[in-house]
Amino acid sequence: MLAEGVPRSTMARLLGMLLLAPALLWLLGLIILPHAELAVLSLRARVAPRVYEPSLAQYLTFIDEPLYWRTFVRTAVMSLIATAITLLMAFPIAWTIAKIARGRSKALLFVLCLIPFWVSETVRTLGWMILLRESGVLPGILVWLGVTPAPVEMLYHDATILVGLVYTSMLFMVIPLISALESLDDSLIEAAYDLGGNGWSILRHIIIPHAAPGMVAGCIVVFMLTLGNYLTPTLLGGKNSLWFTEQIYTQFITRFNWEQGAAFGFLLLALSTGLVWLGLKLSGQKFGEVMQRT
Figure 1: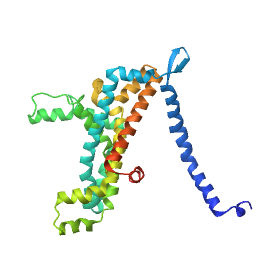
Figure 2 (figure 1 turned 135 degrees about the horizontal axis):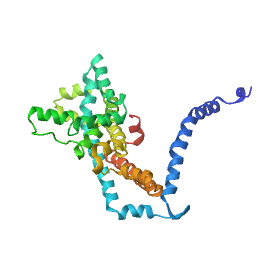
Figure 3 (figure 1 turned 180 degrees about the horizontal axis):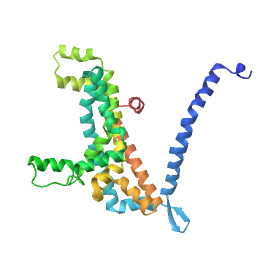
Figure 4 (figure 1 turned 90 degrees about the vertical axis):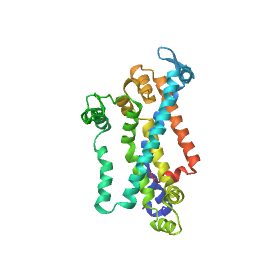
């Protein structure tokens, strides 16, 4: 009886709020509240057992210690390089799936992109270690072919870390690109060829502008995943990986210095937010449009 006197618009609004409630609770409990607690931790310093006072000492430590900010910069640069390589490799794959492959071959190519994600990241990374270690498969093949006189240690190099990062994040670049390229009308490309355009001019003036939201969406996701990756750089790079997430892990787990670890976490969050904002500005894309492609 009460529902009969409630306007339809009010009922629709209440229903919408009810449907959003689980997502809002998840957002509040798992994102907002933990980040608020980390913010409090990062802005205090321990002066005695269980005694704290407001302080920026954790951030000053980051500035004063060269190891921390050099690792911070290195992580950002390596993540940008990994994102760029992933984009260059994923674009032809996405183009083939979206525009060239048909029927079963299209589904097969997409499944091939999914297969690595049927196992955990740990198993995938350990697989690369088996392939690339000095006594592994690939060095043995190079010796058998006569390329190298003795097995070569391929682990613990920057190139190895990049290989692992690109392999781990490829799918997250391919999917937004496929979504963007599938909406491209083939008649536009045919008309461009009829008007005398070549492959490079069509790519630059038609394909890339149309796929720009998908490219930016993929780059944002891959960059964030790469920047926050811990397992792949640590296992493939060894003790000299110098990845910033390893510094955060050390502060939280090894040194039990939660204040310093929280400060490092917020610095990493600020870095990812700043670079994503810069990327959107340089590409001329809007965040809402880009996220629709993810």
